[in-house]
Length: 269
Length: 215
Image (tube, rainbow over all chains, first blue to last red):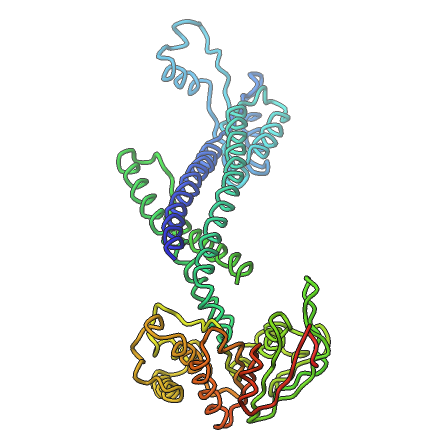
């Protein structure tokens, strides 16, 4: 029985540790996804207009761009506005260097939010590029590609790690329950002999597993809530953690504890 | 009624029993006698359905080993009491709680538990030891507590597997007296033993078993 008690203690501590790992990697993964979302939402397409177009042709072109699927808004940026933007960005007036304004006028195309996966952005950009009168199309495709790739790798690592951690915690809980079952073998045998139902015999072990998992979950929950709130109060906006997420950790503890004890009960009781 | 009909059990080791048939009617006292390893415990196990026969069948009241569902086994067991050579008492609780255990785990109410436990302890003559721990009692007393636990639910039949196996002749006689008293009140008793001398001293039907077969 003492062995079982030590094992319970080790089991809960390990559960805390493993749930912390699950929780922290979850936060990292959430934040990468969130960052990708935010950056995707910020992608605009800049379409440069050929210098040969007159005002009414430009207006027609703008109207055609608005009709492309997935386009939310088209804003015309005149040569003059582009020159002002240039000056803001580089601190130098183009007219100081050159006698005429070399900057082309352009359309700044913003997209519907739901269309903004990288593939959709590419598709829309190429449609815009095919419009007669558009010289060139610009968007931050490479950066987006890289970010999406990184986010995919990170979520694969997460899934792998999560599987290990889940298997590990199931093993630990079920092993602890096994030890408790062995320690109470005589009582269990007598219970069976005097006609205790299976549910009656099994329920304490199920509760024990749920207790271990949930205790681990609550402690990991507290640790993660406190540390992430601390981080967020020092560096506001650096972390994105929705409130439901914290409770998922307790839920994970509960489910792992329950499953671990069910495994042990099935095999040893 | 308990009835074994052509029961055969084969263990992977090759041991087991076969062609076991007998009936225990209400109020019977039956000895199952044979040397160690003859299959006495196996026969008892088929009755409390810890082992189901490979052939034949066992009938305990309305339950038949051929048709019983797993979830009904506990309810069948409430109709019988079992005691063993090694008592199987719990040293972490006193005599009262040991006997009460059999009623607690089947969900009886506290008031009923108290009444029945005191009655069972009186039946085995140990009411005055209710607050003792099992380890503070002699071997004979411990076996009587085990019997009290087996009869506290007023079973139809008491199965006793070598109940005197660990006890000296005088103490064994005390246990036999308790079993006879319980039997006299209408509970059937099936006692497995290797001690033929003991059996000869008492009334009761005797079935002999050797090498897994009845003689």
